[in-house]
Length: 481
View 1 (tube, rainbow, N blue to C red):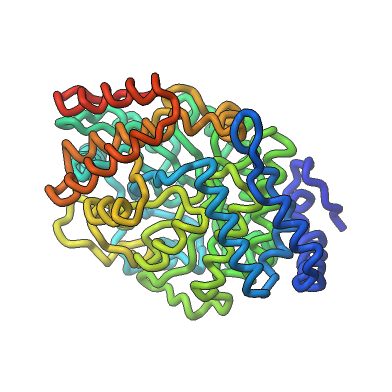
View 2 (cartoon, rainbow, N blue to C red; view 1 turned 120 degrees about the vertical axis):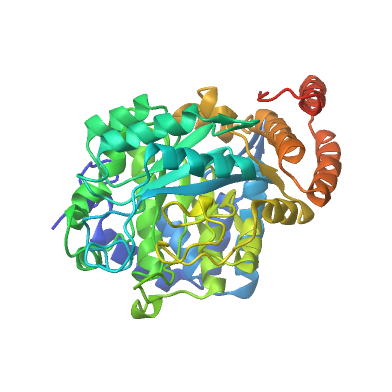
């Protein structure tokens, strides 16, 4: 039987079933232990330092106790601390992005995804480079600057060469004032050599969802195809980092397995990356199983109510305070709105989850990977964020200035990231308002920028930010700290 070892490179040792089961038992035994809960909450709370603010984070056992705790006033305290942490390290900024589906050809048999090989009636499609150009221009015309490319696993139709060529195409397109400045990549687990190629292609974050950390369930849910190999999939982030990729993004598909098990496994994976590579995940995503072409989410009997979903988000924020947290358009406007105050720092806007969906006037449903609950336009999402006190940010500066991996985390951990992120958010918001926003959104946004500029504590930074924002009105673009 494998022993738990967070520094091991073997999946069954750093995501250890015995340790997870012991953790869940410990959490259940201590969910009403007020002395321990208060101690954990105090540990999680942001602390002022001479350089700004710091956070210790929580172990998977400590975080699991909080997740199990059902004492109403303690749950409220969890939410309050989650919001404090998010504001301390990310401010009221919300980073915007969109997924771009390149191909739905796939050789895997995943039971929760309509792209699975046995689905013979779904329309299969792979974008040509010209079609990618058209999709990217459509996204640029909305105002997007950051994309996450998605495609199924198929060595014949979607080889690494196709991915690399597509990234090159995306970065090459300058349309009016539009440009995609960061391409994140969500592709199947691959080799160190291929990760090196992705690094050389100047990708942003490499994203790979675990789907489930429960090995037996994982193998049952992935009955055929290369994704069936639990260890190869689970160890992918270590190969990516060995290949030179600084920023990796984790996530599980909540609803496939019991949420407490998944939560513990997710935090353990973050601990493992920190222990081995000295830097945890750049992002953590929290998708839930949703209806799709031939997928009925009711088949999976581990679905979680909105209240518990929001608690999971808050507890992740306490456990891994410096990570970016992402919520997609799988979730409704209402759920996304509440999640923003519990730790979320990135959201997608105006997403289409079908191949070639952005150039279609009507949202196509026949080839969507999942139902999109929040179907608002990007302009509507941006306005909604601002009306609720958030700054929509299209910033990609850290990635382009080399502030990635441990360099980003060092800045984030000592609170210095706010000296550049806050003004960068305002600068990119001004670009969006001038180039793409409706009159109503522009009016709200310009008032917000004026108000938020005054919050910049460094007078020199404030003056420079104001001059950049004025120059944007005059037609100049792409300023950054």
